Image (tube, rainbow, N blue to C red; front, side, top):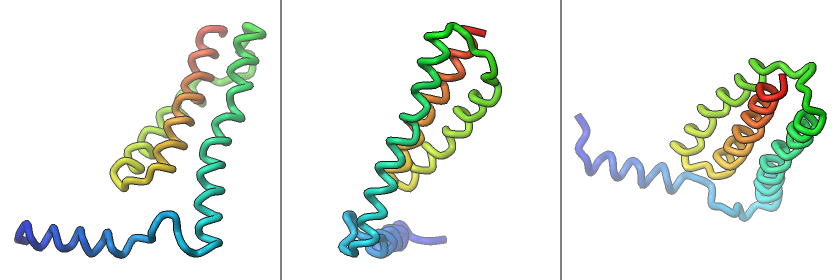
Length: 111
């Protein structure tokens, strides 16, 4: 059995091994920024689908089960981001959860 001090020191060592943010390496820093931008932009491209369903008052061709599963599958990613303290992952998947749920709800409302 480990002592609490051992666990504390282990966590401290793991934290010291993590890359700093923002990363001083140009390419890693650029990749961090690109991933964050894609994490926000990706869900935004789904918003027109929601507006189309609402504007046309029709969900023809939209599978409620698929969009509901997309939303449900976002939850483990949100938890993963939270547990690992990865804010970009949490932000991206919270946004995905919102838009995937929005499509599913709009499809239910207009089917």
